[in-house]
Image 1 (spheres, one colour):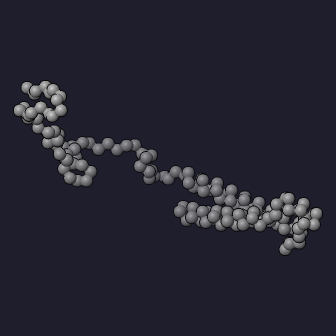
Image 2 (cartoon, rainbow, N blue to C red):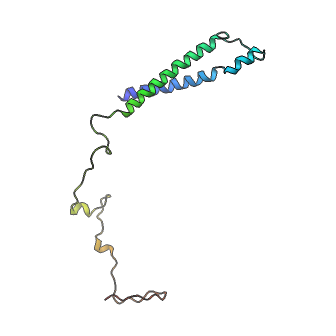
Image 3 (tube, one colour):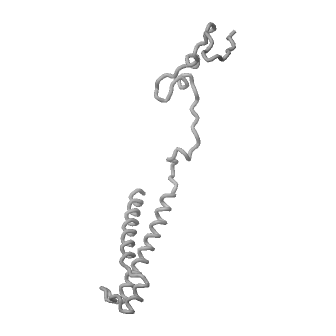
Length: 138
């Protein structure tokens, strides 16, 4: 499957680059009118009207190939694998919390307990500077 997608992407890139080149080579519709009044040269490699037909048909064929390859890439990009390879598509796995799992952080170091995270309160502490009255702890 990966080989097919790689091949399709390669064909699409080559088709796009060739199609860009062909569009840049082609004359616009207004170029023929300028040539009719003598301000341009109507001679070309394929003749006066042959180049427009050849380039137009080649561009149309390449546009069709580009469109078909784009549809194929969209199909393969949207195809579901037989086994669920995505974490987001399956149900969420619930890990039971044990005392060993709860006491560790993801890095592996033990986490501090809730008692050690709270600063001890001193009953004889002086009031804070700034004049705010504090209620003494009982």
